[in-house]
Length: 391
Ligand SMILES: Cc1ncc(COP(=O)(O)O)c(C=O)c1O
Image 1: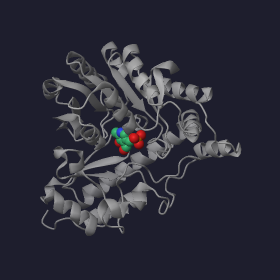
Image 2: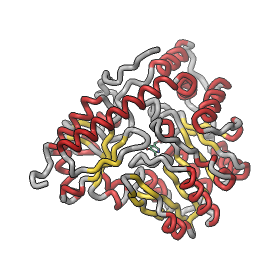
Image 3: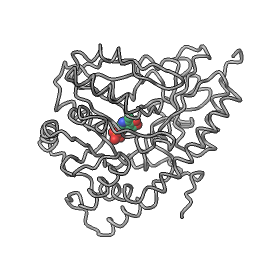
């Protein structure tokens, strides 16, 4: 069996990658350690790169439809990892998940409609409704025993009058893996209020082995009849630069409407490399993913032990999935703007500002630990250099 070496990361600088090559634009500083945008520094696995190389060897890259072997690989993965045995007719290629959410919003809502989200949340959940003239309605998450929980009473109140809910499953930030009961409650509340659920499951495959991802549509007939689920190999296998996401729509009426929108807008033909890369990921990726999750578990443990020794007043929400740490800096008592400035210009580290995730993110930062352990520890060492001495 191959032992992958996640300590050995690629030098990504100069590859036009957002994470390293857009620092100046995003942070106003180039000389900082980038631990922000959510892709990883690990090499995309060899079996995916080989699949792309093999397709290149054919030497003609013309119009291409999705291969049967690709569809089978997607369906098998969905069955094995999500527990749902689906037919391809219930699925559709989607270039990217944020695009998919925007398409669903255009297909099922009109400007002025209300869209329900739980905050803090991945910023496009706020921006996409806003930019397309919809109004987002936010139900703040509660933190209970170091994990996000949905405030169902609040969600029920806020759902009234909304047309759509965008659910982050697992949740970003925080890496919360929602339970079947929590998802059933969401499904019931949304059904009662005529709110269509969009379940973004991009982080699902990165659920750590001690937890279990539950795909939204599987929790009840109500959920299956009133939802669109998006999933992708992009986060899991570090191939976000390839258009290769998928949506799953089990309900025939929802599906007819959504697929008519997608096909009507000529969104059916995917990317030639996306197909071959996704097929390789979903058919050959199990062992790489197992080792990746093991390595990320080690990164989380290393970060927790560094923080508890050097900055015990900071609180890390331990992720149940994925490679993003949601860190509570409020004990430092520094106004959020000053905290961001200090981290960028004094500590020389680029983290995501919690306020981009909604007002509940004030005093929080998100740190990407999808990199080697030495970089994780270097990032934390830099953060510690701006620790207020009084704390
Ligand atoms: C919850 C969530 N959805 C979607 C995306 C991006 O998906 P895509 O690149 O397919 O648009 C991200 C990336 O960080 C994410 O965290």
